Image 1 (cartoon, rainbow, N blue to C red):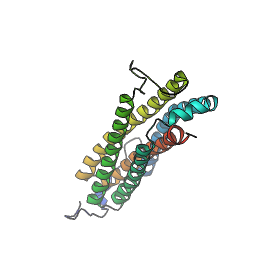
Image 2 (tube, rainbow, N blue to C red):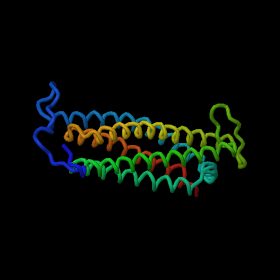
Image 3 (cartoon, rainbow, N blue to C red):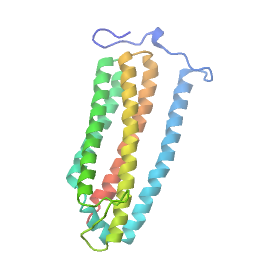
Length: 225
């Protein structure tokens, strides 16, 4: 049980017996991690196909794509990159705190991760709103008016941009929902050894979100020359 300061050592009664289909907790832990890795590989195929299509079109229409990228807000994207990388760090610290049986510390780091994720989505929403105001959002039948040359190719760029950032935002919402559940579980602090495993799996998912954003930031925002 946690102390009043939120710190607790591992005790035999905290150990959770494995599910009936597993011989021991190590086997159950490895099975859980394997399941998450398989899931992430399927997600990687989704984003990998999208990034590959972008790369091919970027080579084919290099000048138009580079010009279209200059209409994206690089400063906001850089801030969001810093926020997301910081959230990856706070998530790792939450895992370490839970592993050290520091319940309150783990709660604080998890809360920080959630707030950083929400800040990312708020900035992304503001950026989308700005693009909507400039009529650079060719989705849902919205008008698209591009001031540069070859607007049809530029529209292709913005279609890929909104698909990539939209999918990423959906994954972030799922990730934040998972972290909110983990926050509630850590606050209750039952079966700490099980929480270690669950936090590690949630951390893998959050790291995947970070990696996907780095690719989006590089391909859509930085390749403007």
